[in-house]
Image (cartoon, rainbow over all chains, first blue to last red):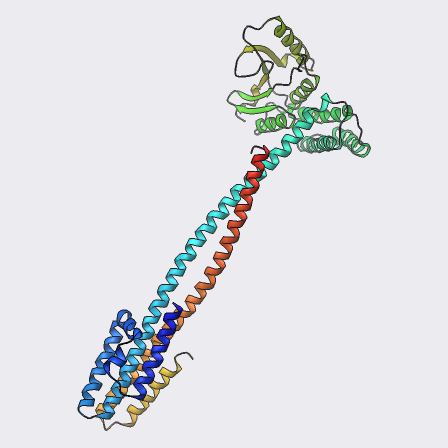
Amino acid sequence: MTWRAVLILWCVAGLACAAQQTPGTFDSFFASPAADLAREHAPDLYEQARTAWTAAEGAQRHKDGAAADDQRTEARLWLTAAVAEAERVQLDRRRAELQREEERWAKQLARDQQASAVVARDISRYEARAVALDEAERLSALSERPTLNDATLDAILTRVRLNLALAEALGASDEQLQPLRERAEVTARRRPHSAKAAEALLWKTEALIGQMRAQWPEPRPGASIELVETALATGFAADRMGSGVLIRSERFFTSNGNVSNATVKRFHGLLAAFPHGPVACQVAVPELPGRVWAHRVARLVERLRRMDDPGRVSTGMVVTRSLSAGAVQCTFAAYRGL
Amino acid sequence: MYAKGALEQARRALQASSGSLEDAQAVSRMQQIARAAMVLAERQLGRRRAQAELFATQRRLATMRERATAQRRALEALMRDRASLARGGAQP
C-alpha cells in the first residue's frame, strides 16, 4: 500500500509538472502506473481527461496555442482528479480489509473472554472443592485423633462461626447463640490441643441449627442442597436423588470391624442438623453374609438408635457388589426434590 | 485547507472567465478548467477523508489486536492453572 501511494504521488507530481512545463505527448501524460490506476478506478474522470487532451491536440494542430494550453491544463486537472479518486478507492478497500481483520480479532477476543470466564469459574470450583475436601477430611478425622492441630482447629472454628450465623438467620435467639459464641471465642483464644471440646462445640452448633429447622413443619426449599453441603463438609459422600438425599460412607466400621465412634457421632450431628422425616439406612454386606456381618450390623443399629428419636433411623442389610462390604448409605426421604 | 491549490486554480479560472467576456471560447475553456479544478478539490477531500478513516481503523485494529493477544495470554495462563489443579487431583 505504502509504495503504491508514494508511486501515485510521485506520478501525480510528475504529471502536474509535465503538463505545466511542456506540452508533452499522449504517452508521456497517460502512460503511467498512476494513469492506469485512474483508468481502472475512475473511468469517468479519466475519460474527461482524454477528451480534453484530444481537444488540446486538435487546437495544437490548428496552431491555437492558447486553447491548446487551456485544454492541456483541463486534461491535467481531470487526470489528477481521477488519480485522487483511484487512490481514495484503494484507501477505502484497504480500510475495509483492516475492518474485516478487526472484526476477526474482536470475535477472537469475545470468544477468549467467554472461555476465560468459564475456565476461571472452573478454577474457583476446583479451589472451593479442594478447600471443602480439606475441611471435610479434617472434620471427618476429628474423633479418630485425640489431639488436633492448628489447621484443624481453624477449620472447626470457621465451621462453628458459619453455623452460628446460619442459626441466627434461621431465628435462633441471643440466649441460644451467646453461650456458643463465648465458647468459640474461648476456644479460639486458648487453642486447646484436645479434640473433644472443639468437636462438642461443633456438634452443639449443628444441633442448634437443627432446632431452628425443626420449627418448620417440613424442610424449606433449598434444604436438600444444604444437607448435601453439610454432609460433604463433614466427610460423607452425598447426592440428591429422586427418593431424597443419599448419604454414603465407608467409615462406619473400622478396619477391625468395630463401629466407628467418630463416624456415628458425625452422622448423629447430621441427623440433628436436619431433623425432618425418616432416614432409611442400608449396610452393604458381601454375598452369603454370615453371623459376623449380622453382629456388626446389629451393633451399628444399636449405636445409631442412641439419639433423641431412636425410631427415626431404620437400618437394614443389602447384598450388593456395587458398594464395598461395610459401606452404609442412608436416605433422608423428607429432603426429596427441594 | 487540504485542497487549497485546486480551489485557488478554480478561483483564478473563474476570475479569468469573467475578465474576457468578448472571447466566448476562452470563457468556456476557463469555465471547464474551473469545473475540473472543483472536481479535483472534491476528490482530494474524499481521499483525505479516506486516509483519515484508514488511519483511525489502523489504530483501532492495533488496539484490538493488543487486547485480543493479552486476553489469549490470560486464557492460556488460566488453562495452565486449571490443568495444574486437575493434575493435583481436585475435582470440580
